[in-house]
Length: 255
Image 1 (cartoon, one colour):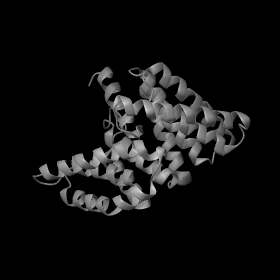
Image 2: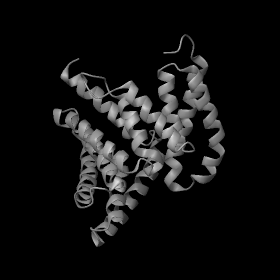
Image 3: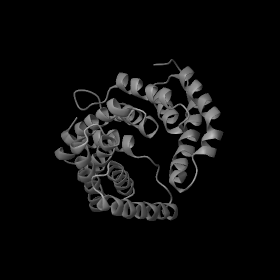
Image 4: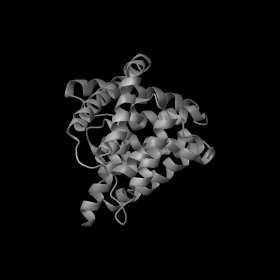
């Protein structure tokens, strides 16, 4: 594999792991961007009013990631990500036990890598992302509906394997299953696990996960509501439909 293809493949995996949302249609996407900009400026004001408050720092880091994730060009993406990196680095330096600080530091590092790609510098950031997510998982694996476990699992699942990158099916299975156990009622965890099971052609396990999704879906639709969840539901509905279609086409021996 050429260095350029290696960089593209690894970073593409990182985007799949970090991106919380599917692409919206242009009209809806503009609405999401406006909301993300509003959250960015509000949390920035809160952070600048008291930079020593841990909650202010990581909430600003989250808003930076969400704005970067919706950026329409790499300059905007990098600018938003750098704000989040700065705030979260200061937080984790001051409070190394802050799981949210390490978690959103990893998220923003991923967005900065995306803005810099393709480059060796961007490729190297993948390992820093892995390290920060791992730290977050050790500190509070339950944070963000078992977000550190979910995102590590996705990163190991999507990335090219050794010797090219950090991809590892065994680690992916371990972390994705862990996320699904820790926060079983969160649709994102079950969907991430199901996507891996589909790729690995694990029909029986996929059937069980899809059944679990059917069971948790009504309550999740009731509990996870409002503007903050609209974009996630757009992604989750599309993924669930694709998984059901993929399951119907699945045949042959399990891997």
